[in-house]
Image (cartoon, rainbow, N blue to C red):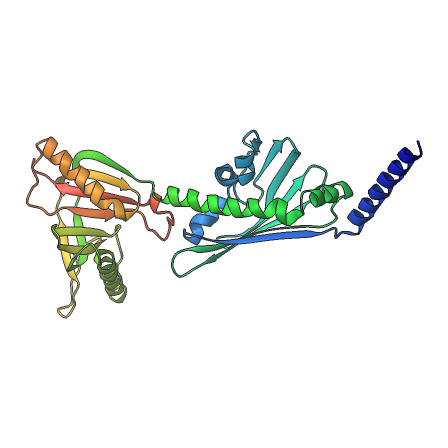
Length: 337
């Protein structure tokens, strides 16, 4: 009996000691992780700012697939929120502030615990990647929650690995998303035609993008000095399509323009012609696949090309569509009636 009393006394002392230990621990915490994501800043921001995207890279959900996600009516931007429920309880998170493309501020609450502040900071790098910093901090931790975190090894151990895994999953999700593409043969149709200013050059697969950019920039500069307005999206007319490409990169204008004799910019005209149209939605790197599908369709259907040169029109401005999966290019191959 005396032994039992000693045991109970020892247990009581341990409980009191542990309680005192918990009580003197800090009531605040902070956990931060940073990762370089291989995606443009705007692509990363547009994904994080909408909670409907989070489940795809939520490491807590990965660890507990039975977690129930409850999306609110508004999931994107300031005021967007969602909640979750798992074996440990119910939580919710809400976006309270955002600086487009650079930062997001959120409030997260789990159970009856006080709100925690969650922040995202995005820094664009010159190589097109983005440094993403994910931070959470809180104050006034309840006694029982402090006890739970201490038993589990602390907030760094509880949250840090999930932040690391989540950022890695986010990187993978964005990489996969940016490689989406679709080629659609739209069929034969009429192209209305019109004038365009252009510069012609030769190129290969290694430098074609650079030369296109240089030509378009020169044409835009010319239009600025001459007060000429753009009437359509940039295009490329292919004079020759072989291992070395001879191309004319152009920008449509509404009417015939008088070109100064000393200018290296020329005026072209595409008449109203019948064409086979193909649409590529995706990165320009998939254009060879779109051209391959186009030429295959011509051959399989016995459609003959006319004497007019084929061309591409870049209908979306990458500046307004940061995700290459959203870029749209239209291919037109003039065909005989």
